Image (cartoon, rainbow, N blue to C red; front, top):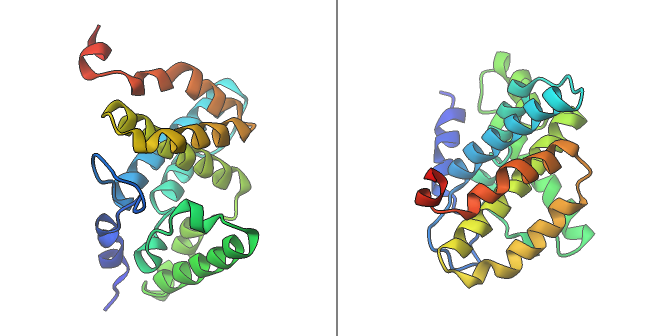
Length: 191
């Protein structure tokens, strides 16, 4: 019996932002879907406007699985995960071990394909998924602030500053052309 997909289905039980008071909860399955949509968009923008040649589908699939290790590790809050380089590096090792454990739940013939998805070696794919992951976090902060939850004010500022550090023209394009919509209500978007 192979348990890989049953474990992947459990992504919906792992909540994010555990240290914060949330107006609505977000699990890693919902988050991964949003990251996949955003990463795909960044890849398409790169290919369309900035001469890229990246496989947008490969980027989207990598994003769908980017937090799969958290099924086994849980979601370690960002302030802890990035407290210092030793903790960050140790956690990356733990994530890698968790990904290997998940891959080993598959039939041998499928393992190589899923190993590449869970731990992509392509730097461009990884870069776009990381940017989309940060973008998703920023969108969560904006949505919480829109709901009147001031708990996310500092997180929004820190996440926006982190986005500013990326040197990706497709991310800048997305922020310039699409981000303001996330600050609007449904009725405001209709006008």
